Length: 439
Image 1 (cartoon, rainbow, N blue to C red):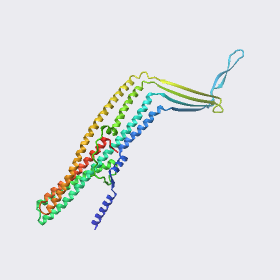
Image 2: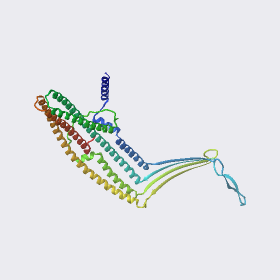
Image 3: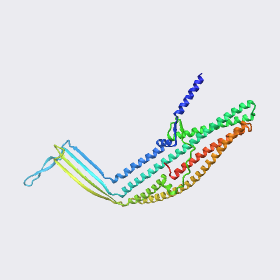
Image 4: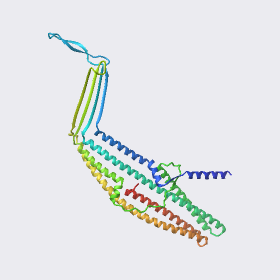
């Protein structure tokens, strides 16, 4: 009785676990990956830093405003000997100690500085904006690569689970066949050799199930980790693994290049190198700035101001002309020239690599599509052959070995079909990235 209760409790727990399993189709999994993937979060922080760098580069072009004020309370008078009179006939001067400071001293000043002409600051601001555009493309490329990796991981996990399901079904059928052969052996209708062959086949398929289960668990571990799904959480992949997208249409190379974020990032890198050369040359130009300042001061004994007040207003124009910097500016110009050449070479290499990649992927897609069609025909034939072998065995026309061999060939055909479908999906995802046809 206790054993039955324990078995019932285990069945109820397994049913509750399956009921609590979360279902993920491909779109739901991609959405989860974008929310929780660390690499995307890091790339977004880099984008935020670039935005702040644009604000910092813009600040020298805006007016600088400053204000200053001070108040002094003199706690002690400072007498100074001062000539206050002289004798009528021109005698010596008469000196007297006179207070030389006031009890209260107040001063307030406001200044505004504006750069009227500063090519270096303006070029740096343009560089920061271009760097922001570059970082936006880098972020988009990182996001697309993460989604691309998630799609491939989803397909590979589905393949591992499908292989496990095929192996388990095959092992179950082989076990039933072995039990049937054992009953027939006891009845004397089959030989001991047939019984041993079915038993060996069952053990081999049981070992294959163990290996397939390990592969599936490993794939699910990576599947959960990539999207930060808790390891204890049961998941079910609901995407239709048998449905494959149609062969993509051929596109021009220019269309594919314009759609790729990484290629656009290289284009912006070359433009940034061009700006770097302009920035290096702008260091030879002078800069002009203007400053306006207003100051007010007041001193008094019985009040803050009133006894001795003053105001001051100034307008200053300044010109800074660089003359000699020890060869630093010439070195910057040469470095910028080298950066331009390197960016152009990298862009040409990337274009060649993309063109070669597109041709190779198109060949893979065509081959994978043909493999799928062939695998479907092979599976249908193997399934028909197994049915015929089972009928013939029932009628006593063939041995158990023929049924076992037919079942083995069906398993291989089913696994081959699943592998071909997965290979086509992986190649299609490669084409999406290579052609820039990503969502």
